[in-house]
Length: 383
Image (cartoon, rainbow, N blue to C red; front, side, top):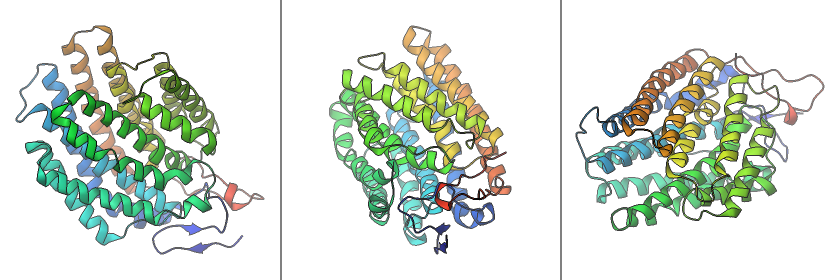
């Protein structure tokens, strides 16, 4: 089957389904790593903020600013500067159109302004304007990727609509931050869960050669799970978490997925099953689960890290999730938050080294399986 090369990404197949195998490693530096320095700075800054916040809760230090403002900078920085650029790379390598360099220069400038102003003053006019520019790039990404609505099978097709849905959370979160902090937290949990589960998880699994997610099952399960973890907990959400956990664990069972990522995603599925036990998910368990996903299997899969780095990142993420989860069972705050701070510090070192190693030496080039059509081949797992 003939393939034609696109300007910004890999060869695109004339198929109704996006290919599961992405890109020969020789092309990866030209497509993935224009964002290497912003992503690396984002890892260090957001992880340092997280360590400082947990250390303050453990009583180890005094923060230089207000806790809520620094927490906003921490959470927004991780999503804006680390995860979204990694998603762009994964989409581009899968043949999905993404914003060009001019858009991305504007995007990273807005990210810098947003993180600094969030840390300094929280939700103020400057940070809101910067976040609006960021949301504009997200919407442009959704528009450019609209072709997957027709061309892709499975859960990948939901990506443009998922990004549109996440932008709708931003105004109510900003308005509720001062008037109703509890509602703002619930909205933020649903926002993050929608972003991670519907917009990022399908392309992350696709990128590592996992099995396709059936959109008819995955999309409603992920949407109900996102609501259950935030604004609308209930029995239906618990059932959705069970379905989500089983489907993700089943998708990564294939041996084409590197063993550390297979274990990492299976632990994610097991965690979803565990949260389903609670009619109203405890706050600390929800926070721990989201941290595990965004620190462990999600970025390791999006960046196609080497197996050793993926394993260490998932291990540190599991340690942090465990520390945050145990806080719900009555352990002393100094113990749990201190353990989370240590795990976060180790994760920052591991993630920095793993990403630098990834940039210097990409994983082995995938092999097209002989006798199989291109749109069903799988990449060989990173070694």
